[in-house]
Amino acid sequence: MVEHVGLPRLEDFCWIATQEPNVHGGLAVAVPFMHTRPRYFAQIIGELIYWIGEDRIQFSSDYAIWSPRWLIERFVDFQIPEDMTEYAPLTVNQKKKILGLNAAKMYDIPVPAELQLPGADETATGPRQPERADLAGAA
Amino acid sequence: MTAALTDRTVRDVAVTAEEVRRALGAVLDPELDEPITDLGFVRSVEISGSLAGAVATVHLRLPTSFCSPNFAYLMASDSKDVISALPGVAKVVVELDDHHDSPLINAGLAADAGYRGTFRHEADDSLEELRWTFRRKAHTAAMERCLTELLRADPTLPEENVGTVRLGDLPAGRTKAALVRRRMALGLPTEPAAVVLVDHDGRPYPPDEVPMALRRARSTRISIDGNAHFCRGLLRTRYAGSGADQTDRPEGAEPADHHHVLPFTVKEIHP
Image (cartoon, rainbow over all chains, first blue to last red; front, side):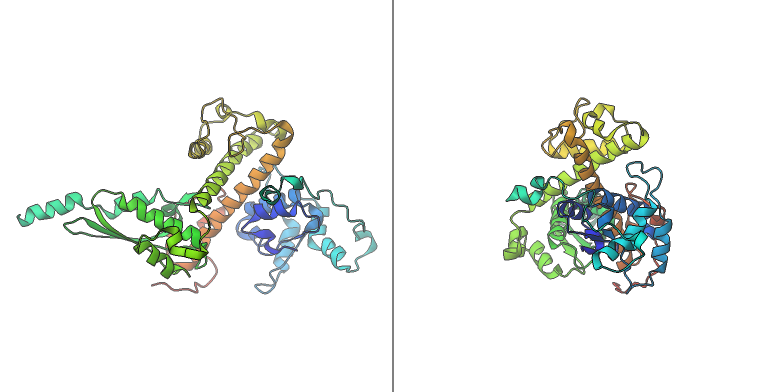
């Protein structure tokens, strides 16, 4: 789990994480941008869904700073602005995964059977062209 | 020499604080790709006159005490260089305030010790390489802004097709002008027939690599825009009133940018 999804180095995190199927992104620090910079947050979540996929993103609360209830409620209602046509709208299924089901799967936390995510670790995204990674080129 | 003549001579040669600020407008924060004057990093400019020429004293401030020392040094030493180049300036003092490496950087600047002379064993290989890295990133972001504007304006345009868009196809405006400037900085061609989506050496991408190139460029642009606004906010929180010295940044702007009062107590006081 990489918290803050690498912020302020979002691009580096996306590029590294997309090549490592066991890297998950934690949304601490990123989620509260829904309040002050919703367009920025929309792009962060849009990029994460593209680069690491909806199965490897997890909600984080920054609980020591505030009570996180408002973050959860706002995320449930959050949507990508319509003019950002480069991203598909967030689906209810994606939000469920990000808000808890991905964590339930990772930590073996029991959830109702109909909500259980498939056991096989098959993500739609996974590593992309690892041979083109910056680090591989520098070796 | 009469007193009147002396006065006039001093006025004729001495620069003004305004001229110094204007010169500082050429100094960029490498990572955010913006002039330090727009970011509010110039804390004060003072000119004291002497017959031999003006003494310009500039204080710089940054959003945190732990901003990258490399970048801090680069901006401070660039500041000293552009002011030194002004006619009528006899001496330049540039000091970076409130940074964990302020004593080191300020001593290095005062002694004109250079980057390696200032940081010694902690120095990276080359500041020039750092500059190029961020020039390339700035170009990448400018390129993506142009292409994403096109894609948003025309929902029927497939992502794969932006690989053949040429400079001449882009509508005139701020976004295109910025791209042309960044291309010039990298020495890339700027004629209308030049392909927009290219790598750092100006090579276009094969069609199957276009979406990935665009996507990578997008994550670069989002990072730069996000950090440019984040750093502005940190500076305003750290230095009360510094928002008045900042210029709004249209790229990545949000309505909250105009609410400069944050619901936090300013913990650091810098009288």
